[in-house]
Length: 279
Ligand code: SF4
Image (cartoon, rainbow, N blue to C red; front, side, top):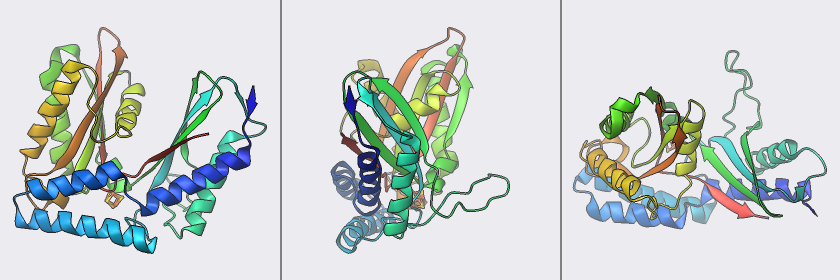
């Protein structure tokens, strides 16, 4: 067994969140630069240039990439040989609190969804834990902005809806979002599982490298087909019109019931913050 100190966990969460807030990932930066070459509309090009400028300013001056610094989602993959002496969720939330206080990041969480009082420290995080083999702990943080999350959707299709039904639902979700989800988007799609599994698949799909493709040939084709259709909508960067509405479509799948075809679409905005560490 391997004991992982909870202070190390808290420190890692803090560091990952500060890194996320100020620095765009290398794959995202490269995709935005490619989008600038592809974009045909003058306004769209202007938006993409400003996003590139914003990446540099945020990184050099250590100021947030966006004023909406997000509600934090944390994925933990815990090796079966790992032992924590204490409360792992408390350690994660301690890291969240310290990052948002020390980085002067906006506190964007209300305690009760009806009373709407800000918790004042951006805690609690939404934590998903999975048990894996070995003695390592993998931590992924995803500070998710409200705009793109609000325009995400889940639908329980019937198997008869098939591929066409899936494509139509993804397109309907993207069209409905328009500029509100802050495109160019990364579109995470979860197909299969059940009512709670499909959205989780969609969110996990957002963690993939922007240059990878599904290892399943049929799903890889579907990713390309949907991306092309999204970019034909003309929504464009920040909804000002143009060719580049999405940078990538990522589809993760899971087995499902013979009577079901759950589909979830998790929209990710152009700041697309997420970082991972393995301890
Ligand atoms: S959706 Fe993303 S880019 Fe838009 S305001 Fe929220 S965090 Fe910022």
